[in-house]
Length: 290
Image (cartoon, rainbow, N blue to C red):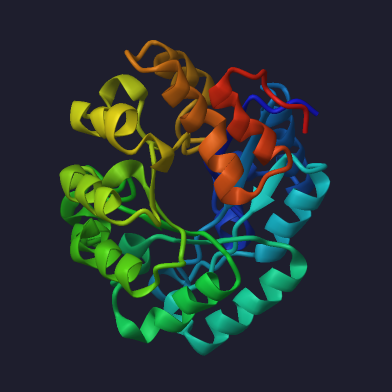
């Protein structure tokens, strides 16, 4: 198969969360799996897929087995990240080990909706597991659309999404941990740029924002300062991949940076097939077959 880009940020609701979605009514898990696989196949893209477990906060859990099934059905096009409720601690660690055995290859957490601080040492065994197993840890940073525009914001507290000190502390404590800061931390995006500039194990994903709305400081760091640490992400299905790609192509940016963001950096980080060939694209080679 041909892959022209890797979307590092695609949601797939599972378990209780899927059943609570009106769009899921009358549709089987297999139907929804086929939909997302066809979505990325038709665009010659690969993607990282995951859910978020909020059991302690909302009572609605998730099902990592559905992510495993989705990945297995994708014929190599999708890569799965696990989700756990960090507050379950020992049980969460056991679930990560089970997910590793099942073939998942990373962890996604959402500190705002899961109501925890990333640098709380009670959760360090989870990050140590990721570091020791070579798993990237994807962390939601910045504000969130969940609860936005409602009285009290649905009870969610935005401070859990601030990059400093949480992301900075964990990146320092786990230097071999590949930490992906999703959504580039707005409105604290300058903090995150400083953290990523200081710590090469911090990557920035550009998901959740139409590219024409990305702050200019973020684009400057992407194109001119640390282009090797930025990743394409759409936030599927909340933001159309087609819109994201169209607007990204219109940005004033070096073509070498564009290739890095869309494919090269993710291919190296996630060890996708063909990643070595992808990295040689900076020398002008064509997109690899994988």
